[in-house]
Length: 179
Image (cartoon, rainbow, N blue to C red):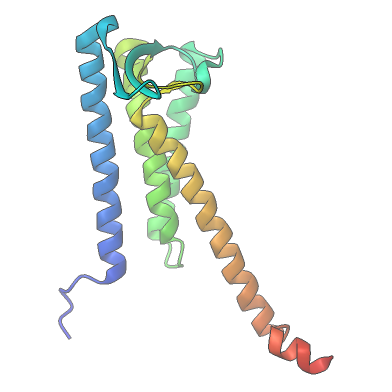
């Protein structure tokens, strides 16, 4: 068997990293477009439901009033923590590699927004969802990464519960035989 052939798992990891890179690059391009258009950047993408609308956001998610150097320091610490966490998972030999892609989504979304804070003093938001909020692809990456991370943790927890129940003889077949 040829060892150079990519395994299905390796292919999925590479594909996941390509998707992360596409989102990151797309976010940076759209932010630069929004800045170049300035306050004039306000046009429909999906009717009135989704508009491209440039809004600088000096605060955290959903414009909650926390900003400034303290917020930048907190974000830098989070980014460093994510980098260390990803490196730790890569070095582990266990089956925790499914957590790397969601954490990478979170990391690159946070890096994109941190770059905005450092370069422009505010995060560049440009997607205006009617009745909700204004956000960017970096925010989408963070949100999806968090959702996928917790879904993977829940899936792993169920798998571990099944293994533990099987090892202790508490699987369904044995349970019903004892009754």
